[in-house]
Length: 603
Image 1 (spheres, rainbow, N blue to C red):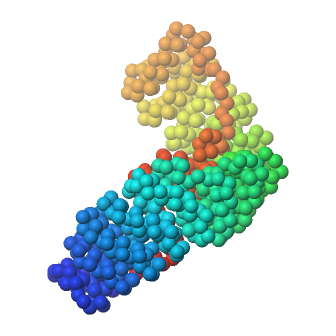
Image 2 (image 1 turned 120 degrees about the vertical axis):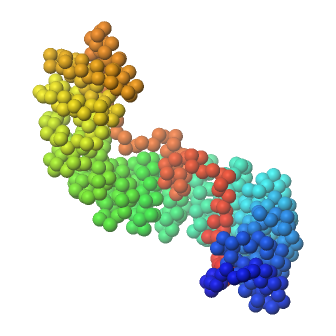
Image 3 (image 1 turned 90 degrees about the horizontal axis):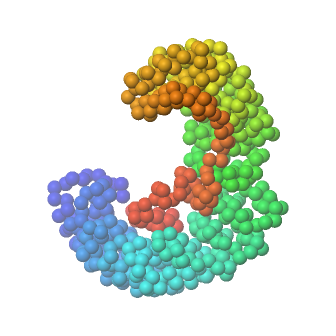
């Protein structure tokens, strides 16, 4: 075919193609069709050749016929009236003795999303759904889903949904898997009860599961994950039948099987059974980490959800998630999150040693997140908090600018979690004020100075240093400076009286930011009318912060678990947040491309 992409741009080429397409020479006609497809692929407008190309449909050459069908799929939308000319050819091909031609005709009619052709498709499609050849039946099953996109009412009225449900009992596994795929797609697109799962249906699906292709298995497993067993015995039976799929070589099958198991374990009450199946999920998930980086990333995003749902799944596999020198940055970042989730009193030393090592890397973003993870471990594990603080102090002493700044931000959170416990490190923090150029680090340091003003002898001098560039600072830093100055005044009025007057005058008379100005007026009025009320408000006890490892709220987590191995589990968002169903009309086409071994290019 590559030869046909050369020597383009000849004068009157379309006219020449028109003549060649009408030629009685079979070789010349075949070459002309190839040239038309070449031009179409390169973006040239060959719609004017529609009639001539359609006339080539009746050729006995299967290669040419496939190319003609490809042309029709591409131009039928822009030439719907002319597309109807091809209907008779499609109908005739649907009765061809060759099953490949029958399947190709049905498939092409389904791909031509033109309303006028839909009604002509019904009868050939009905015959194809009951064809003697399983290849034709499996192709027709997917065609029903395509027809549903164009005309849902037509599919319902013609009884195709009932036919698809009957096909779940077909003797051919490929037919069953395609019927499941079509019914699942129809269910998502607007007929929720299209696929009715009963005990007998589930048994049939489990029986053919081992014989399906890997993508057929994925569709069946996804459907099984939505099934609610009638009792615990049935749930355990399904678990036993799907468990071997965890050893499959395809990562999509592994994740879909994991989804079925995780969902069914909610029904099982026997703790020993639950423990056994949770333990069985660990090795397959670990195996996914030996795949390509892109698969590792998807696996890690899913593992974060699974570990939140079932924390014990990978509790003994922390070393698997240590970062390798050649891991892409996006994999490393996800591994850090997983390490924090798996950190416990038994492995925290190993995890902290890893984080310290990561903090010496050259990638600033990775280093900052590693430092942040040390703080998350301190907040998560009270028994390891002191060790985490010591590690942070060690990192601050390296004097690396971005490490010091991230450590200050993290230590502020630790102070919030454990008030009046680790204030001995404040002196070390105050020695590194000159390195601060990040607004969040500045705001954190100012908060620490204001919060512990009574314990820092030179708190006034430190705040004065920040106030020199007040007008140039970002809003969060200005707000923290204002609050810290008021705190210093309330705790040590003798050294901060002039400072608080200067700051309040500055923010109320010179600041253009309404947030800063309004807070300045509020403090001014509080201090001038009722200093005790100001003290009660500004110096009130603050709620301690909680561990943020499990960030996903329970309701969202359940939805994401139901979408394991899908894009939703990678984005950590519900599908409705990023999918526009009107623009998702090619999903069934993509599936059929993967399923169809005969769908090689005709060239």
